[in-house]
Length: 153
Image (cartoon, rainbow, N blue to C red):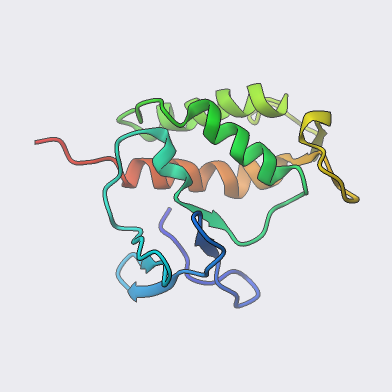
């Protein structure tokens, strides 16, 4: 997948999961992004857990329930070892999302799923944007988890 530096509007596409800082480009090859506050780099190996996929976040969510679903998914699957292939890694995130948000990403035809437990206010509070997860959320998680798997020697 590779990380794009900017979104379709010319803004930073991602921010650090530790703070709201936009990531700076330190290398155009890839590109490699770095948080100016904590120093996290996107080319650093992780711990080999699905939690590694959550190190950076898209700048924009689809609906107000998405950040809450993101945190719930991280809490649910974060300590699971990252499978060695992208398809199995994707399936782990899809299965977790089914548990926290109540839909199957591969078969859902709706655009949104309302979850009372993810409703923290606002006009779209509790709504989870299925298309956002299909097009941005899960692909980012899979890419980050796989790319951050430590190389076993």
